[in-house]
Length: 78
Image 1 (spheres, rainbow, N blue to C red):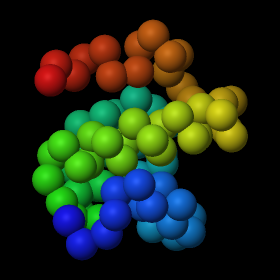
Image 2 (image 1 turned 90 degrees about the vertical axis):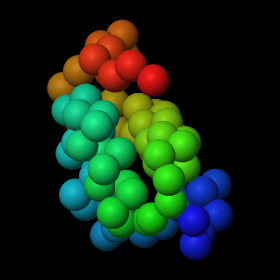
Image 3 (image 1 turned 180 degrees about the vertical axis):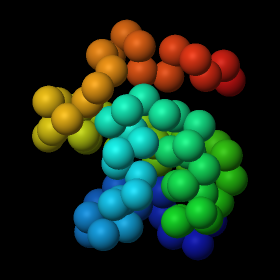
């Protein structure tokens, strides 16, 4: 991965424009795919980035989510 995964979530919003809606709707597989397309890296990196972004969005924009905490990612098996 070309960028430090710990810093990616701090990127300006323009890189997250297509990814955040996927997170808000609980579309984990699509979000991971878009993260890998935007930032590069492997699956593990993308999952780590997704978790950090999800936690940040839950804190900052909880009303934008269409799925509850318990349902988010429930259809993904790792």
